[in-house]
Image (cartoon, rainbow, N blue to C red):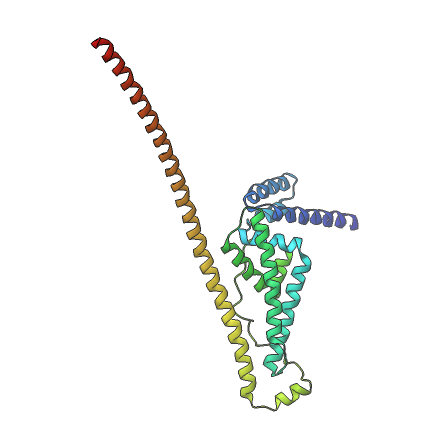
Length: 276
């Protein structure tokens, strides 16, 4: 029994390694490799594994970039997740009314971590020929989501995202968050009117909402910029083609003019010969 279980675990580990390699492939090569892998597993009598593989979806360009960063830079990803945890802790302190919560510092730390990973994703996309402003913004939103949500963090950590994650709407519901037991400063704060806490919590929510709205606007603007850039490239290609055609027409015109000059010269010689 133990031997059979070991074989099963070995096959599962082997399958996981193959799936990992599948998600390392460029997006355009994913479908063919996935289908070939599923077919091979089914032929080997592993129908359940074949069905699992067949259900995998090709990553979007942004998701693929995030996957590669998660695999190549686990230290940077850990820093992001640690920064997100620190930000959530700072938020709890704000809601608890602790004055020196370090909320803004925690936000800045997470912002820097998101920026570093986003730049890494941009580099991966550029090197693979998949660079676009929209994909970079979607990758940034995915890293932000991972920093604030455990399920999103696990999905990014796995390196098997099929689709980018939506940007967080804020820091999530404040319900269920434990209030942080106060230090002396926190105890002094607790004696203040309730509106002090409400004001701090409101400021935290407003900052989070403003950041999320700005991110959504940035994504839309980047997508519009990508569409315009694509249109510009098409127009530039058409202009280059028209210029090439114009150059060819000019060349043919020059050749025709030379042929006409030669014909005229020959006609003149013949005319003079007849006259003589």
